[in-house]
Image (tube, rainbow over the protein chains, first blue to last red):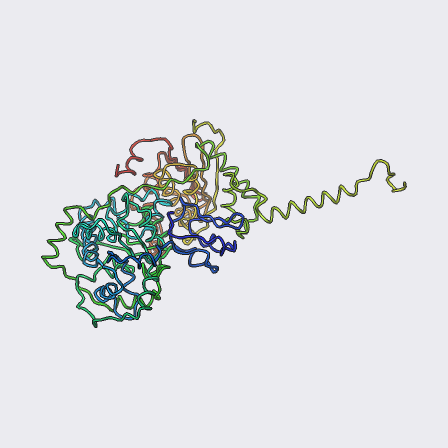
Amino acid sequence: MPHGIKISGESCRGCVNCIKACPTEAMRVIHGQLHIIDERCIACGECLRICRHRAISLEESEWNSIAADNRSMPLVTDPALCTQFSWPPDPGILKDILMAVGFEPIFEDTALAFDLAAMAQARILDEHDSRELPMISTYCPSVVRLIQIRFPELIHNLSPAETPLETSVDLWRTRHNRYDIPSTLVAPCPARITMAIRPVGRETSSIDNVVSTARVAKEILSKDCSPSRESTIPGRDSRWVHWSVSGGEAGHIRMFEKRPLKTLAVSGLRNVVGILQEIELRRLKGVDFIEARMCDMGCIGGIANAESPFLSRLKVEDYPFAREIDKEEMAILEDLYQAGVWKLQQEILPIEQIPLGKDMAKAMEKLSELQSVYAELPHLDCGTCGRPTCRVMAEDIVRGEASLDDCIFRLRKRMGDLSQELNELSKRFVHTMTPEGKE
Amino acid sequence: MNPLSRQEPYVIQREVKPLDFLAAGETASDFKETLKSLGIPPEICRKASIVTYEAEMNAVIHGGGGVIALELAGDRITIVASDEGPGIENVSLAMQEGYTTAPDSIRELGFGAGMGLPNIKKYSDELEIETELGKGTTLRAVILLGPSGEEVSDLCRTA
């Protein structure tokens, strides 16, 4: 599944709230059952936010089986987890707690991987031909999928940098020579879960299990874990925490800039679509880097978090971190940069959308047909046919996936016409009768 | 199959209202989605999208609104923008990058930078402008569907 969510058929009431919330029109309700069109879903999680019947849930790994494993498993977390608690978002504090829960948090590698991703991207931007800019971050898997599906012409603008969450597990495995033990990722959204199940830009993910931020936060809070140290000295080990808030990645990249870089941080679905349109129309001049996140405020706004995104942001803003990168750190980063471990292993390709017809002529015929079918529909976008809009309904009809009678208004009209015809037929006299009705 | 086989053109028309900056770009993305549903390559959709957007903005800023049409026939996409605005006094001047007659009030909004017609020319394969002072302007921009010359390869420059 490319979407990181699962549907519970029993709980689904067939209301159409989710299909109308879906930004890519990827959902249908057919015969009372919810369907997701894989090649259109971007795993943004909007449907999860809106479903009141709890029919949609995250496709996370079974917590109990992970907890039952007595080995101390490597754990990498999205920085959003650090912001979920009453204490400061210090990875050092969280590390102690996670160790007490039985994991081996690989935060040294995580910090290094995030530094590396920031440094590598700054390098690329420094050397890039400005005609090919802006470069778009690949950190948000949902944004990458949106580009693959809706903005295929912007694929070349995507950054070639691997998400540092994958890189950190790669680094840990290489450093410790441990390829035998499963790794766990803590994810704040369905898109991050998807990353581990069906990665983009690499053959297989370095991650084996995925659990939600909320699940892990609940576990930590229920165990009554409290911070063992007041607050560690914020240093290079915590720069990555800022990636959880909109603007964090862009700020981190600018720490490594050689020429003044112009970066833009955009968050929230509408804004992301808006900025991609601007880039497509080539209206965005002089911008080097776009950090786009599908959730409002960044990853702290992900649906799988427990804490309010506003409080999360406050904690991150109040938490100082070391800006200077010393010579020793720089030397390590330089080695890793040269080794190329930060790079995506595969090219990101567009996700082909099925055209209306198998060739242009056929597709154009279908398009004309679509317009006349659309004209027949009530244009209320009520969703009762199981499609989000009348426009989508017309498309499904033309593709042979729906019938005009699935529209309740069309059905009503046909019933009305039929009953009128029946009524007229019933008034027709029989030949054995005279028109006056005498026998 | 030959994509040229269809004889009569397929046409969609959209009305553009004067000074409606909020709706600007809607026609462009609408046309793009239509072209994509036909299986037309992304680079060509993007060119059509840019041409439509610039034509739309010209109608919004200068033309007092107008009508934009997308015509599909044979080997080409034609974008026709017509308005009943003041007309263009000097077409060759208007084709120069940076030349603008947009009032300050519009330039302050970040529009009217004098790149409209130059961009339309840049991203289309053929361009025809009919204009009459006081009567209006009709612009026809053609984008070829086939693997046309350098412009297309310029767009897929990473190759």
